[in-house]
Length: 140
Image 1: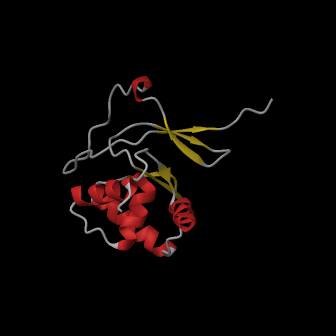
Image 2: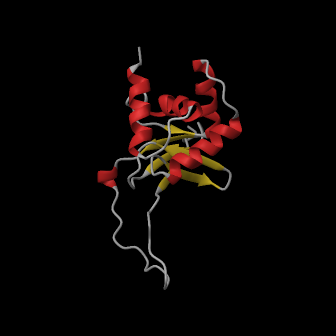
């Protein structure tokens, strides 16, 4: 019997016209199988997949995340030059980056106001806006 997580993952891949290979399917199950939105790094996704009993390499996780981004299934959020998170919500919305915990969460979209964006240079267009609000615990 096919699980609900597997059905969700298969549908998610098929809607993006991606062939549901074994590797894509196991990563998709972890990402969307429970129906909850997630923020993951390649490393945290790799660890979660290992806990399920599936075997994939970290390189496969990186390559598959890139494929998912290219297909519009997830978006990459870069919090600094060396740290990327992958978000299953693909629309533009703000994030909190919790520096003390190295964790990314959604920030309330309704509280964000951007009055104006600069004009894009000639020959270009703005494709998205990423807002990452960095937080650090106060020392009492």
